[in-house]
Length: 364
Ligand SMILES: Cc1cc2nc3c(=O)[nH]c(=O)nc-3n(C[C@H](O)[C@H](O)[C@H](O)COP(=O)(O)O)c2cc1C
Image: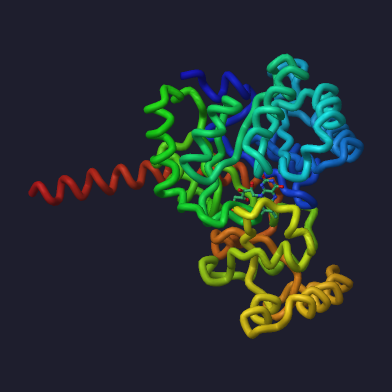
């Protein structure tokens, strides 16, 4: 099996990646994650001009900071770019030209309208960059994983469990069953060389260690990086994440986030989004007509810079995974990466020691 370090020489292990999150994953955030030994991602969006500007900004930041892998794979920008294919497909030509110009280490594909789009995108990206840009695909079930492999032969799969913040498949298992089942399927198909990362609900070292114990080679975090100093979201959203406890209750999977923003028709029907539960959900449950809910959301949007709009009785869409209750403070992205890198091994060692100790006790 090839090693992750050979593919991404600047990384530290286990691999920690920041999710591509529109509006949240700024060039500063992505560069900070890469500089700390992870893989930072930018959201690709659907506008080639914007993508060009974001990549140029990341390049400038990485070029002016030390400790990056800029030299470790010459000619490659040690950063990833993520695309939600269902709303990017029309712009493949112009986006491919930008990818060719910057040669990011990774292009991440998610949520195709038709599975065959994975084939078209991966082929095009690989040919534009002479295979220098690797393809990662985010999937949420066994069948989707195997279909993606058949169509696009990705270098890596991100397995997105049901606890994930933001958009994901409405029907999904948690990582605890998803990761081992997909790994078994990869082995049966003779595809053990495809790396696997776990995403969904992971915000600290214990969950990262659990993902490794399940067989993943690393993790992706979205929600945890929303509270990074460099994340480009509203302060009210950050504060809401910090004060929220009990993510299984405080967050909800629903299509309301898209209906209320009037973007639902664009999303493939299999997807919804996990966000903090708020007044919009309460009103919907109480029977408020959708048009009225949308109207009230639009009014509240005018106050998005006001932290109160992000209270539980507010209406703003604050995407969040179920790990939110474990997030304690706003800090630089580098220190989030370092916390995971430092924290995983002691967790695994503690478990091994506890098992050994218990074994000795019961043999007495
Ligand atoms: C605010 C937000 C925006 C996201 N946007 C994207 C996106 O544009 N593309 C994508 O592939 N995944 C996106 N995701 C999902 C992440 O890729 C990932 O699966 C998720 O964040 C993992 O769960 P966690 O948030 O509990 O860490 C987003 C997640 C969040 C929280």
